[in-house]
Image 1 (cartoon, helix red, strand yellow):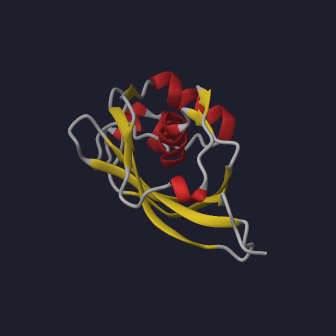
Image 2: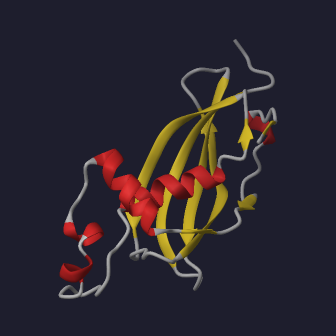
Image 3: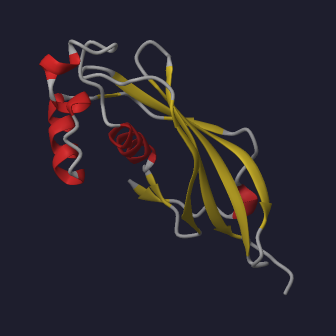
Length: 150
Protein backbone atom coordinates (compact mmCIF):
# COMPACT_ATOMS: atom_id res chain seq x y z
CA UNK A 1 0.00 0.00 0.00
CA UNK A 2 1.25 3.48 -0.81
CA UNK A 3 0.10 7.09 -0.81
CA UNK A 4 -1.02 8.61 -4.12
CA UNK A 5 -2.62 12.06 -4.35
CA UNK A 6 -5.46 11.89 -6.88
CA UNK A 7 -7.62 14.99 -7.23
CA UNK A 8 -11.08 15.21 -8.79
CA UNK A 9 -9.59 16.33 -12.10
CA UNK A 10 -7.31 13.27 -12.17
CA UNK A 11 -10.18 10.76 -12.32
CA UNK A 12 -10.91 9.83 -15.95
CA UNK A 13 -14.32 8.53 -16.98
CA UNK A 14 -14.03 4.94 -18.15
CA UNK A 15 -10.66 4.29 -16.53
CA UNK A 16 -10.44 0.85 -14.93
CA UNK A 17 -8.40 -0.99 -12.37
CA UNK A 18 -8.53 -4.69 -11.61
CA UNK A 19 -7.41 -6.70 -8.62
CA UNK A 20 -5.78 -10.08 -8.48
CA UNK A 21 -7.87 -12.97 -7.21
CA UNK A 22 -8.59 -14.13 -3.67
CA UNK A 23 -10.03 -17.50 -2.76
CA UNK A 24 -12.88 -17.51 -0.24
CA UNK A 25 -12.32 -20.07 2.53
CA UNK A 26 -14.35 -21.75 5.21
CA UNK A 27 -12.36 -19.67 7.72
CA UNK A 28 -13.72 -16.53 6.02
CA UNK A 29 -17.28 -17.84 6.61
CA UNK A 30 -16.63 -18.58 10.28
CA UNK A 31 -14.81 -15.32 11.04
CA UNK A 32 -17.44 -13.24 9.23
CA UNK A 33 -20.26 -15.00 11.09
CA UNK A 34 -18.47 -14.26 14.35
CA UNK A 35 -18.01 -10.60 13.49
CA UNK A 36 -21.59 -10.07 12.37
CA UNK A 37 -23.58 -12.57 14.41
CA UNK A 38 -25.06 -13.97 11.17
CA UNK A 39 -25.07 -17.71 11.78
CA UNK A 40 -27.95 -18.47 9.40
CA UNK A 41 -27.82 -22.05 8.13
CA UNK A 42 -27.31 -20.86 4.53
CA UNK A 43 -23.75 -20.00 5.57
CA UNK A 44 -22.99 -22.42 8.41
CA UNK A 45 -24.93 -25.70 8.09
CA UNK A 46 -23.53 -27.91 5.31
CA UNK A 47 -26.10 -30.69 5.86
CA UNK A 48 -29.10 -28.37 5.79
CA UNK A 49 -27.74 -26.67 2.65
CA UNK A 50 -27.76 -30.03 0.85
CA UNK A 51 -31.57 -29.83 1.03
CA UNK A 52 -31.65 -26.35 -0.52
CA UNK A 53 -31.41 -25.22 -4.17
CA UNK A 54 -27.72 -24.19 -3.90
CA UNK A 55 -26.76 -27.61 -2.39
CA UNK A 56 -23.85 -26.08 -0.47
CA UNK A 57 -23.07 -23.23 1.90
CA UNK A 58 -23.15 -19.76 0.34
CA UNK A 59 -21.04 -16.82 1.42
CA UNK A 60 -22.68 -13.99 3.30
CA UNK A 61 -23.32 -11.21 0.80
CA UNK A 62 -21.63 -8.83 3.22
CA UNK A 63 -18.59 -11.13 3.29
CA UNK A 64 -18.27 -10.98 -0.49
CA UNK A 65 -18.73 -7.20 -0.38
CA UNK A 66 -16.21 -6.67 2.44
CA UNK A 67 -13.52 -8.87 0.95
CA UNK A 68 -14.02 -7.46 -2.54
CA UNK A 69 -13.87 -3.84 -1.42
CA UNK A 70 -10.86 -4.62 0.75
CA UNK A 71 -9.11 -6.03 -2.31
CA UNK A 72 -9.44 -2.63 -4.02
CA UNK A 73 -7.83 -0.75 -1.12
CA UNK A 74 -4.30 -0.61 -2.52
CA UNK A 75 -3.70 3.13 -2.29
CA UNK A 76 -4.17 5.79 0.33
CA UNK A 77 -5.46 8.95 -1.36
CA UNK A 78 -5.31 11.93 1.02
CA UNK A 79 -7.30 14.00 -1.53
CA UNK A 80 -10.48 11.88 -1.45
CA UNK A 81 -12.69 10.02 0.97
CA UNK A 82 -15.48 7.49 0.68
CA UNK A 83 -19.01 8.82 1.04
CA UNK A 84 -20.54 5.34 0.80
CA UNK A 85 -21.98 2.76 -1.56
CA UNK A 86 -25.16 2.70 -3.66
CA UNK A 87 -27.05 0.07 -5.64
CA UNK A 88 -25.44 -2.93 -3.95
CA UNK A 89 -26.71 -6.19 -5.49
CA UNK A 90 -25.80 -9.82 -4.85
CA UNK A 91 -26.06 -11.32 -8.35
CA UNK A 92 -24.87 -14.91 -7.86
CA UNK A 93 -23.84 -16.94 -4.84
CA UNK A 94 -20.21 -17.31 -3.80
CA UNK A 95 -19.12 -20.66 -2.37
CA UNK A 96 -16.20 -21.92 -0.31
CA UNK A 97 -13.34 -22.33 -2.76
CA UNK A 98 -14.50 -19.66 -5.21
CA UNK A 99 -11.88 -17.12 -6.22
CA UNK A 100 -13.10 -13.56 -6.64
CA UNK A 101 -11.54 -10.59 -8.39
CA UNK A 102 -12.74 -7.00 -8.68
CA UNK A 103 -12.98 -4.55 -11.56
CA UNK A 104 -13.51 -0.87 -10.69
CA UNK A 105 -14.52 1.62 -13.40
CA UNK A 106 -14.84 5.39 -12.98
CA UNK A 107 -18.43 5.79 -14.17
CA UNK A 108 -19.46 9.34 -13.24
CA UNK A 109 -18.07 12.70 -12.17
CA UNK A 110 -20.24 15.60 -11.03
CA UNK A 111 -20.20 18.76 -8.99
CA UNK A 112 -20.66 18.80 -5.25
CA UNK A 113 -22.52 21.32 -3.11
CA UNK A 114 -19.11 22.30 -1.80
CA UNK A 115 -17.13 24.02 -4.58
CA UNK A 116 -13.80 22.61 -3.40
CA UNK A 117 -15.01 19.01 -3.90
CA UNK A 118 -16.36 16.85 -6.68
CA UNK A 119 -18.31 13.57 -6.64
CA UNK A 120 -16.68 10.57 -8.29
CA UNK A 121 -18.61 7.33 -8.76
CA UNK A 122 -16.71 4.09 -9.19
CA UNK A 123 -18.72 1.16 -10.54
CA UNK A 124 -17.55 -1.97 -8.70
CA UNK A 125 -17.98 -5.43 -10.20
CA UNK A 126 -16.93 -8.62 -8.44
CA UNK A 127 -16.43 -11.75 -10.55
CA UNK A 128 -15.80 -15.38 -9.66
CA UNK A 129 -13.21 -17.66 -11.28
CA UNK A 130 -15.65 -18.43 -14.12
CA UNK A 131 -15.92 -14.69 -14.94
CA UNK A 132 -19.51 -14.67 -13.66
CA UNK A 133 -20.64 -11.41 -12.07
CA UNK A 134 -21.45 -12.14 -8.41
CA UNK A 135 -21.78 -8.64 -6.89
CA UNK A 136 -22.15 -5.10 -8.16
CA UNK A 137 -22.30 -1.70 -6.47
CA UNK A 138 -21.33 1.93 -6.90
CA UNK A 139 -18.69 3.52 -4.67
CA UNK A 140 -19.19 7.25 -4.08
CA UNK A 141 -16.11 9.35 -3.45
CA UNK A 142 -15.71 13.00 -2.59
CA UNK A 143 -12.45 14.26 -4.08
CA UNK A 144 -10.72 17.61 -3.61
CA UNK A 145 -10.41 19.82 -6.65
CA UNK A 146 -7.02 21.22 -7.62
CA UNK A 147 -8.57 24.60 -8.28
CA UNK A 148 -12.03 25.92 -7.53
CA UNK A 149 -13.99 29.16 -7.59
CA UNK A 150 -15.06 30.55 -4.23
